[in-house]
Image (cartoon, rainbow, N blue to C red):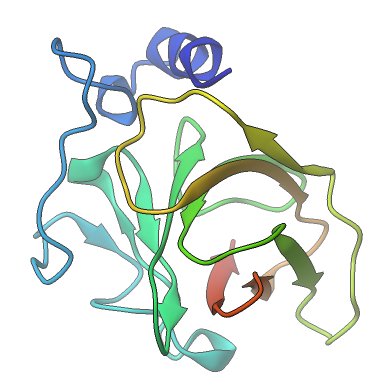
Length: 163
């Protein structure tokens, strides 16, 4: 599944969203801050103060805000941050046990259904800790959107500023 998504992203000219020639996702330690972060620095905070940044050097990767465990995602998009009217696929890797539960909240605080997912992935070349799922989000208005992800003992949050 990731291979097809990467092929689509490659067709759009965003080659960094996929794997290197050895089949492994190139990554830097989580504590490294890239100079290509978009929409702020570090980890996102509520109300997009700041928004969760996309690390363009890591192929549109984002890192969720967690109190324990880890949460990473790869945005399968030609550009980030998302814009009004777009549907964004994010492939997540999250530590913990049990199924992934995802809630999606618009800027007015209303829960919105996901466009699709979470769909578990059994094979992947995305090398981050935890199990992997694919999700889709449709953004119908500008503002700060909140994505909350939870497993049995871990929880994480991402805040996306939609333009």
